[in-house]
Length: 525
Image (cartoon, rainbow, N blue to C red):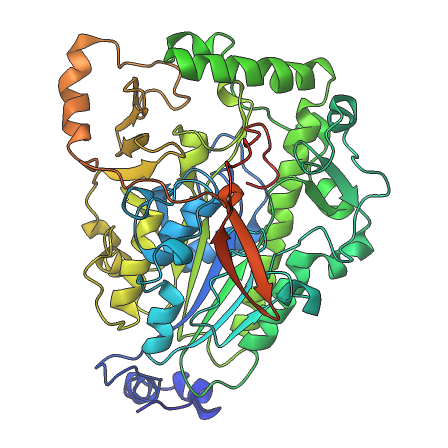
């Protein structure tokens, strides 16, 4: 039977251990589980790499609230993303299955192709949870929100509900710079619709913060947190920041004077030991983006803009933590902070994600809450794919035999027990993947070319060891952790037609050959 957490609960906590035990017995439980079912706040960011306070990166944004959350719980220092850009990464987290299993490598819609799978929010609802979602939890274009299993899913306007529930972060009345595009590079390169956000940045007036979409989504999540809940709740809050365009209030830009900004370490001939197809792609991006930015004297401005947006995202986390601390749910709520993947800022000549290198794959992954050890760091390698099976254990969800990844519940209770393991990340091209552990990153491309990096000695991944015969045994051992078969790719969004019916929608296959996708278009990623 489920019980409400009464106002007396907070008062009881200040008394004896016996009183604490009594209070815990009044917490909501699910399906008769012997331990209380915790509430969950699931806080997602977009394109946030490891440049944050709790991680050991040479470049770090000012993130006092991530630091605050890390002090309360466990920071996984070597967490890897599930997919190399937004859509597949988020599909993997919500289904608990790798792209190699679902075929969702790029812009596939997992719930169209695999309606039989039970996504995370449905599993929680079936276990008695109230489920609330807002912002970029799935991919942001229309037609990607899996509406099943949500008690409420918030969008800012009725028009969004009637056009496929897009996130529309920078549309429908959201504050924008006076001139578009604003960045000198974007203007000179003529970057316009449908890609106006790529390589675009600008400070906004401080008073615009209250009307920014990420702020409004956070406002709504806080309002849900402040309600009286009769059942355990799950609040999924997805921020678009620090995804490009890098718009943030001026006060966050002011935190990063240009003369104090540290640039990423760059090796000029870094592409020389890459496989031919990868080298060609990275050399092109270096010549057209990285070299041009350096020539125009904009490199520090771009880094500063990304850091400013990271600090803006951190401020929204702080608002949620403040609201949680002021609520009766402070001691009964798990908070999970994660990013879908990282982002390159000139490393290996690349601006963007979709790579199998550390800048794309290494993500912040922080957990706090009841039963989770505070002030702890785990060096063992983990994956965002572990999120779903961990919540199965912590929230008493019914088992799902098809879940991939590993539960981290034991590591959260006892961080010293964590053992390193090999984790998989799938590339956007079927058959491309990486296998990573604390020492090694092995990369296998669909054309059977390879890379190998000794992460312990080569943080910047400047030396590809795959061509050296003495490392063949290492690579073969890592390959054993990869799937033997990769599922065929499902239809991409360009092959589908979104059909809306009031506030509902579905996807249909288009007739005729699909249009070619512009691979330089990062705005829809």
